[in-house]
Image 1: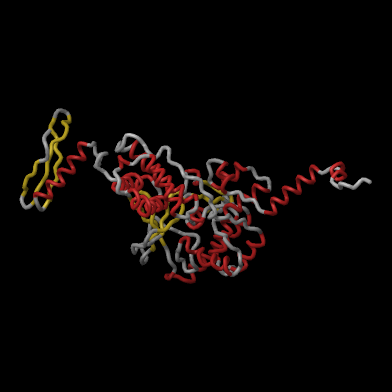
Image 2: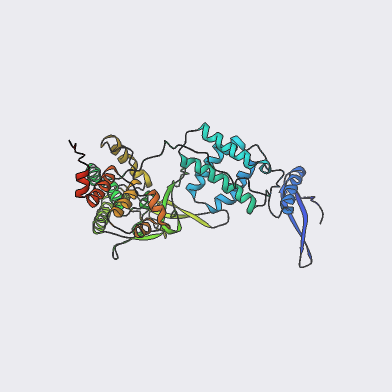
Length: 425
């Protein structure tokens, strides 16, 4: 095999180089269309280097950490990770990793340097511990792939990487809704059907915010009284065709069926009847939508965009969204924004989120004797420890009740006599 040769083909230049024989026959890689000879030489050398490195563009001794992050993001993250995860990773890369350590060569970064970088980051900023863990996760993942998948470096310097001790004073306290608060909220927004029905749906199922807002009427089986949780909704910058997208559930276990209680069944079936009435009222001005497949560079369907229908064109992939404005307009999670501003300021229920209905559902069920495995399955958790550690809240009233129950079980006449501590003369 020889090196790259350059040829002129009409107006344009072409590079060409020989590769390994297949079935004893000589094989070549070539590409034309370059306006100048220098352009062809440069492109040909890059292609030849990539070929010699078995399709990998970069060599260990040459690539900077910043360039590697771009390569890792394009070739691994965009193919394997969900959009919201990619968005978080990209922010961490661009705001913290590239400015601080991007200038170093990938192969020169050591565990000592990375641990020093993490420690400095923790001293410099006042993030929640969960966000520092996300930064740590990005570092560990990108170096693992650099070592085990791409072979850019011989050892993984992030294996021993860990956070310094952090006192997390910024930790957000989960809110446990009570009956009085739920009644206050529903009474205040009794004229906002979409919000109250979405609120009740999450309250009575523990579904995630994105899961609730992504529901279509095809997901709701009234005959068997089941909700089929199959996807989540998220937004991207609007490119003129729409900003809301449907993707798979957060985890494999997130795809599940949830039985509707009689209260939720009645809420949804009555809400649907009213929505059908509004469709007739608005007529041709009622918004309708369809799903449009979004492909990655390999032609694989990664997600679906929710696109508004134009005119009377019939769409095969109809998107019959459940929670919309009265005129049918779909606004995704934004349907929750205004109500929660009012809940915080006017109703005075501070630091509560729509998402806290999920934890409230788990806590109330478990406090009243429901098996934790059953609750974990309904929430879409593979491990009951996830349910136990992150979604079960303890209130002051619960703690008082624990003390009172123990007191009633253990109190005896002997104890009562002893604790009088009477003075004996």
